[in-house]
Length: 483
Image (cartoon, rainbow, N blue to C red; front, side, top):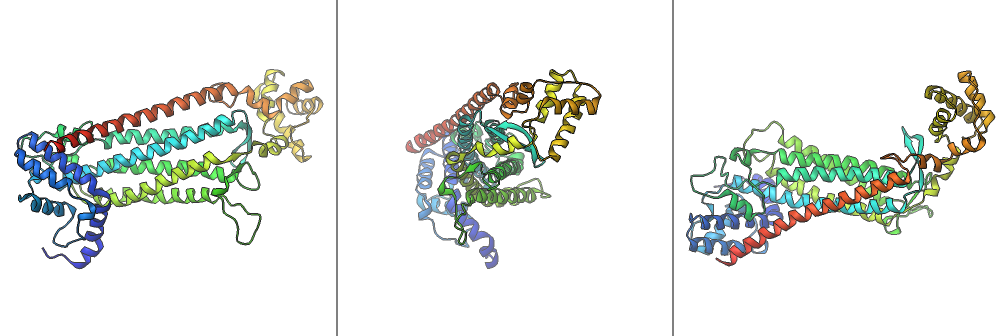
């Protein structure tokens, strides 16, 4: 067939080069597994299966030619190589279509990519938890609406960040369950008239099962869109955390010092130590959102059948995105692991603001007998008066608090000096909040233990999948060696 040079240059040749570089090992795995199944089912003679497997396993990227317009894609190049080596005519193509082959190839690639990304995210979780453990009781200022809110601890913040990353891992793992099914045996879309064993082929490729409906097997793209959704949630979640870390590293706060290897200097300002590694991470995550949107757009308004738009044409950009994302997550892990957190940087803000106002109002309820709306109003008045004087809550005395209560409620409440001092102390504020989920020491220990257990379970789940894939590889190798 004569192919238009523009089509070759723009589509076929680049796609062939990508297939040789990235997809060839997966394609050989699929064709070997399929051929072993054909031999086991006596659809191929043992001699034909043996020679086909031998020819397939001899094919490497280095031995493949540049793109030849005579062949539409790598699939037909391999057929030609096998036929030349065996003197046959592509026996492996019995009961096989490019449709189920490429659908399977995409799932094999995506499975490896997701497993790799889960490992990287679990390593990041480990680094975050190590920092949290080192800063169990370190008090910091928390913000809402970019305003001072309440004291909390560095560990409390980091455990919240780790929980977000852990949920991203959970999303990838549940998405992996839907990716990890074999389309092989679906043929073009209606299976085949040959007595193939789909389950056996699936097991040789490390799949725990098959995509049951053959039409679904070659037509579905929701598993690709789901992974794109996971990417989008991850990019959004991590970029929010990174933005906080960049703020912590700012001159105005100075609570985070990056290791020298992650900094850049200014070409003109000698004092600069710019946290550019975090900025690169943030930028990479923004680009990932674009890839997610590209995936959904490619699968939108296309027929439910085997078409290039939602899967085949998306594997190259998704592969590039995965490679970039894996590097980004690993870079962030190294930045977090090597960073120095300086909780003392928040001390002036904790002393000089009204972040403990909630505890003072709570104390008026517990020790002064006020209803909370009354206590809230009294402390609001007190805050307004002291803000006007350029003061924080530190040093407020019984008479001043009593006056604020009387002015707002008409009631007289006088608390001892030591009770007020304790109520406005940031450390006391944190220590009182020991219910599950709070920043108190006991609550933090519970959350640390739970997070460590969750991380261990995630690593164990990944090992189970990898052990299954290794067992399948060894089975294929034994079948190949026996030919």
